[in-house]
Length: 217
Image (cartoon, rainbow, N blue to C red; front, side, top):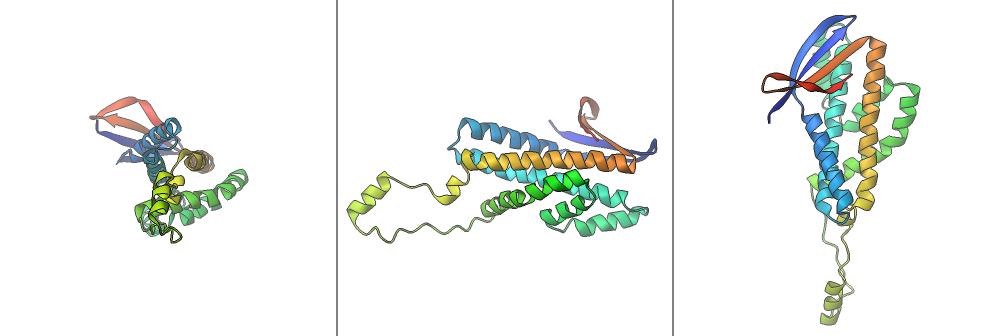
């Protein structure tokens, strides 16, 4: 079913904006959660690991972009300047955007993201490795005999990339993605309170307001 989101922004008790968009971040979150459950059930199945990493990164990119757009509009009194600022900032890479968000975060939030930042980089390095697959085949020059090849095939090692997509590793990436998403939610709540801005977003299904809110910030 097609789902869209209506966002209402209020400042000082007055409506300051009404916006319509897709809810891809919500869908990415569900896909990430499904992949995580699949990876836990089948820890050696790298298909779940790929989905976990890919959709987890999609989720963080969508959420970070949402916050950068929100900040751009909130920190500027002139609407057109806010839009221009967002168009400039959206070209930055994810970690640069997170650094910008961090500059406006609380001391506790800054301490949290300081720990998460290198872990986020590891997740996105793996995502980029998947998206731009260029791994060279692992070579075994010491094996030159037929008997050696037979023994090798009977005891096949696991490629490095596959190891990085099994649950033992993706579990750590899963925790990083979930913690970063929670950090972004925490930032939005504290920043909105500081700015006295209330943003509520609800799902709209076929033009009818859904009773279940996607989130209220």
